[in-house]
Length: 133
Image (cartoon, rainbow, N blue to C red; front, side, top):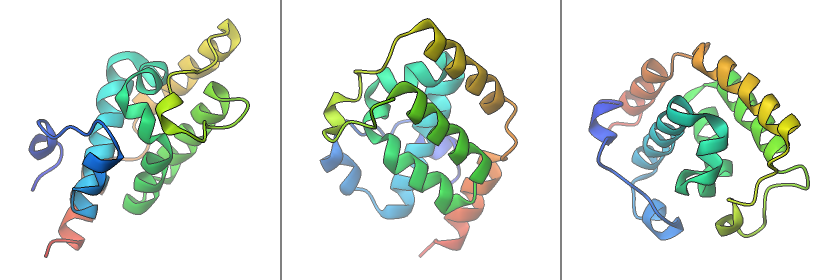
């Protein structure tokens, strides 16, 4: 499998869908969703759509592939969007703060994300190659 093209048509709507995937595939799917959402509408869009339900798993996926800078960006975005902490029930992920200050701070993180300090495509493909069975 090659990232990102092999993952364009794989969607997860809930925890059950995610758990049904092989762990390496799940990692790539989470990162594909992150990239698609942030590139299209920023971290705010990531949190408002289904992908935001998997924000904490996406941080883990970023660490798994070695995207440490991007994982720090997402951790910062989570702290801004959920100042009281990420919801215990991930289905409540849409309830982010919508203050102008928070949206401005997320916008700054969007810009940093788009610089791609971590070469996500390369990192994910290397990860998939290492875990090819």
